[in-house]
Amino acid sequence: MEFVDTHCHIHEASNQTGGDEFVRDKWAKAGFIDPIALVKESNTAGVTRLLCVGCTLKDSQMAVALASQQTSCWASVGVHPHEAKDHLDEKTQSQLADLVTDNKVVAIGEIGLDYFYEHSSKADQVKMLQFQLDLAQTHNLPVIFHVREAFEDFWPIFDQYKGIQGVIHSFSSDAKDLEQILARGLYVGLNGIVTFTKQADQLEAAKQVPLDKLLLETDAPFLTPAPQRGTICQPKHVVVTAEFLAKLRGESLAELAKATTANAQKLFGLE
Image (cartoon, rainbow, N blue to C red):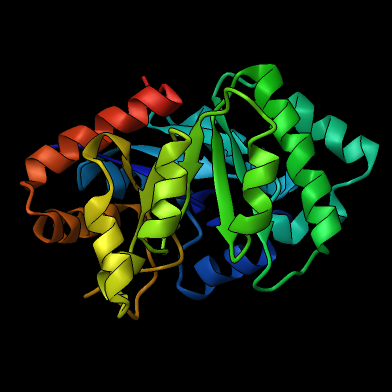
């Protein structure tokens, strides 16, 4: 069996400066400063492909750099809605657009709207989202979406961009939101949250995701699945989440692994 981690931030596990300081510090405090070692450990565990996801310009550059060194890694380029306010100037957006053309870049993301914290204003988040959706259309790339407590504003924007493919990352909502996602042909990314949530509606929604629209992810170093809670999340933990989901959904692990790997290859072209 082989698995794909379609969303991780292991490129921050290094001694480099820049990128996302919060993510880097989490890796450092746990003693991880070598992303290549994390890749090798993941490959040994059966996670044969990893998608390193950008959250800022510098972070995206680091993701591309790691992907260029590792045959089992690819990168996405994007600005997280929290960081929108710092990426609205023309020079920064031009650099981001140039980075998209790298041959290891397979997606735009993670991008979207986050009204839970609102580290950037709603207006700035919308501007950055629209710029990056334009990039996705121009380069015909799928999109990794981060949407938190903002679907009401997100859908009218998304619906203006015809032909966009992508995934709702870290899905942790109910069947009502799932219906809207599937109606637009988007994939659903499930991670460690599903293994420790106490919300019955989230578990029910996870059961309802069609197998041909399901993607596995970790969001490493965050959201460590049970029973590994209390340790830092690594890409290899995608197998733990897969085991939980297979039992929850009444599918064999082999069936789930085969389908989710095929889905990742289809959406992101991870050949």
